[in-house]
Length: 147
Image (cartoon, rainbow, N blue to C red):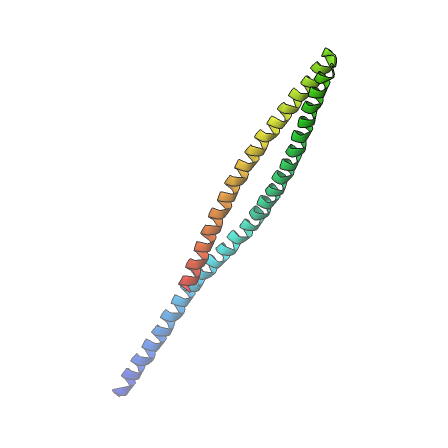
């Protein structure tokens, strides 16, 4: 008879141990799956941001090329004006050329300001994206450490 209560106690302690282990695993796996889903969600959010940043870079490069061509055109207009002045062109023609040059300068200046603003925005977007990546890497390393 003394062996029966002892066997019951052992069996009861095993059942409690298994139950405790199962509940612990359930608790840990639930938080792990939640963290995993959160990390995957963050990763899917980063991809479009990354693509958008690349698109912004392409647009800025295009704007730079356009600005260079505008600047070269303006330089040619100035050269033409100097030639007209040397060749003794009329006042109206010289005034018209100067007006065109001023308009071209304003346009180039406006394009430069726009390009600088775009660069600043892109720089801010890039910093934000890097911060998001850093946070995601930290989350992944924390997730791996917890497993």
